[in-house]
Length: 172
Image (cartoon, rainbow, N blue to C red; front, side, top):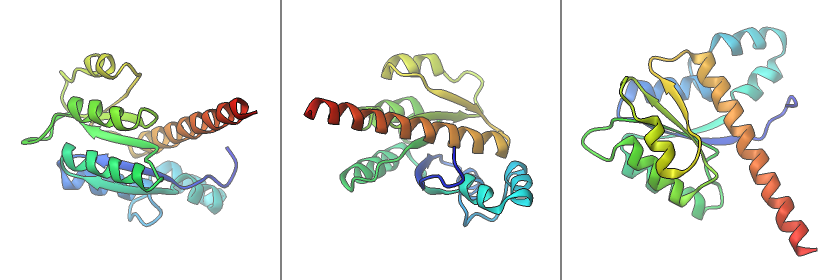
């Protein structure tokens, strides 16, 4: 990873406004909070710190709203690279159903299930959409969240670049 990383779009779907704020604070340059990792790096190289926190973060409080945001982002040609989904969001769709619907719209989006429930059925969710999903247990550490967002957005970028290359090769 170089000092300059393309700004990736992240979507957070959670029914708790405090959790949504925490995601924004940790992942975006406009956030008020900073993880200790980005604080350490900012002392050594401010460009690296800014690169690490260079995410555009959108939020939704219900699964159906998140699905609509994903659909709109795809239509605009600016899809989300990483989507964090709470497993339980009453009274709406479950996190599993939300993940399934989002995967139908955008199979390349990197999905991360974030939940405080011990009995969350991550294997069931993985089977439903036939894709590996990361699992983030709440409460989580800001550094852990930042590193997951960075790694998953890099995976998403690699996948997009690979697909572009395949398309170019087929055209030749």
